Length: 209
Image 1 (spheres, rainbow, N blue to C red):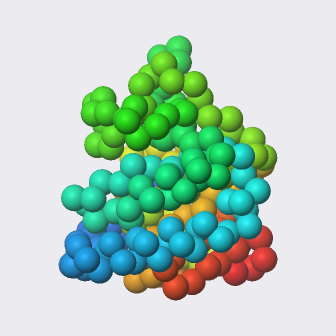
Image 2 (cartoon, one colour):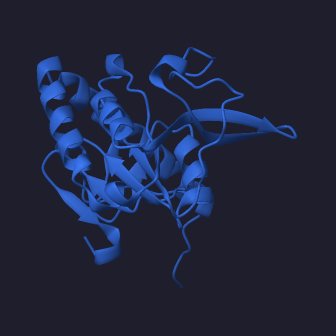
């Protein structure tokens, strides 16, 4: 008789595996000199700007980079998209009827501030960015697979956001090329991205990579 693996044990192992990968990817990212991260970030911004899906989008969700954590610097992308007439939103947590919900709120870089999260947020009364077919969300990651599986910081913000927005919107997961892995452990609630983009490669999950 075949023995069924305990689902609880399997989930614990997957969670532990995720934690180990996060630790490794943080170390790898931090090992890249600041000048190297800046050059790679600039290349990612260049590649995003020629992405047809971004050109068609009216509303774009970005994230303000935590440079001290080695994140991709999207500040030049914010400037370029505003010049092109796009409406930009940034991550913000909203409390509704006792529930905490992730949102994107329309804001300029000058609007962003320290509001209790690890990242800079818009004011809580800023208007919400629409989550519909006109929206593209640029999504950070510690690791990505060519099939769109994503590993974040473990907070769950983007998984909950993307579960509401994609589809009909599009999520573009971005990372440095060394953060692309063949496979990631997944757990309940994980939401894959539509497109994976690095400074070197692009994978469109709708086309099988």
